[in-house]
Image 1 (spheres, rainbow, N blue to C red):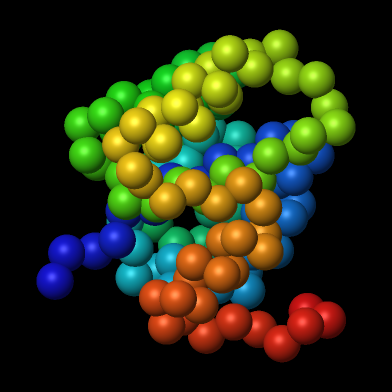
Image 2 (cartoon, rainbow, N blue to C red):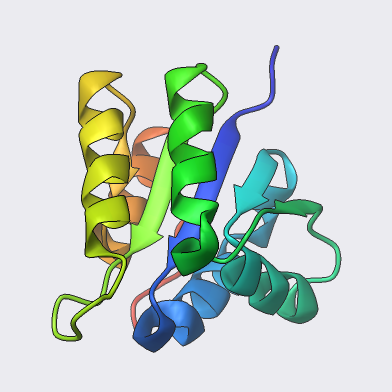
Length: 132
């Protein structure tokens, strides 16, 4: 069976949430082929050194577009993108393009932790108890 190919992305104000998510779900993620935008991947790698993550460029420097290209080439099966809706993003057009590609290619895309955990739960991954 092929390994699930998962992209991890988080806006600056959501990077701590992504690190906590990765810690809580490291067993699931360890069984996946992981790719991440640069800063997010670096933060997750530092917190979870046992996870093998291919780090791309930072989102504003082209990382979102690199993941978009991977989606278009069918190189990503799931996108977990913790979005900060309250902070303006200078590269908002790249974020919208990435979301559009996920929709066009029918790739599941979780934009917050609750949705990411719902996807993992549907796949049979164990979810930590509330109050983590």
